Image (cartoon, rainbow, N blue to C red; front, side, top):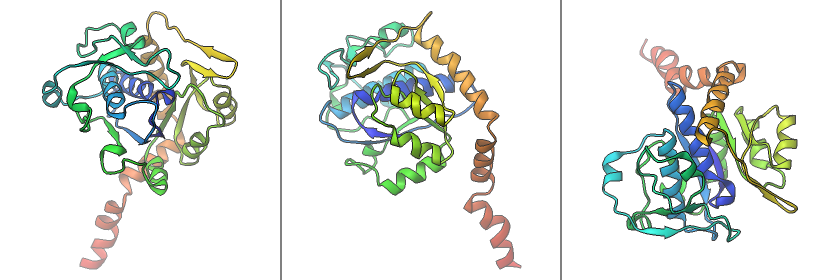
Length: 262
């Protein structure tokens, strides 16, 4: 679960990519919830479409029937710095496309119907703005979702502190943070977070990561490590068992209902 302003600076597409790599490399089901709220930096439906397509490339499930209904219309989607646009001249509809082309997107073929209607062609990704919360998900609901989630990924390329990281940690999530952002590195070390390297930008620095042999290989390597560490984490084990095996439904069927019916 990743709450944030829907801007390319938060790197939502990197969350989708790593989540896809985790699903591809393991037997686990993966669902990504973006608690997004509006931003003037970018047209939201176009950016959300790009995020879904990148998630699809890396391994998240897509409703092929819905995706097949789309026609294409080339557009340009720029980030809030007006340079190094997030998507540019890439066709990633085919799984045979190279990972390098995805990493250097400057434009993307976007179906015209994404301009006015939510694109729901990727069932493994949910934007709360598409389910009745266009101006942001309630704060209490964000904390509830963090309690239900096990993994928090923050690839943001600029942070002044990282409040959402603290909130995710307080709800028992495994933390994956961008090592190249000083604020995230400092906070993450205290919280024993797992670090990965993504682009970073702030006053005085602007880094661009390169991956050998590819970003796909990098993500899949770390996806395996992350899942193995999560499997060995006693907090996550207890949290997951309590949620799955001792849910309110379990308590009703195994504790309360038998008392009432006896």
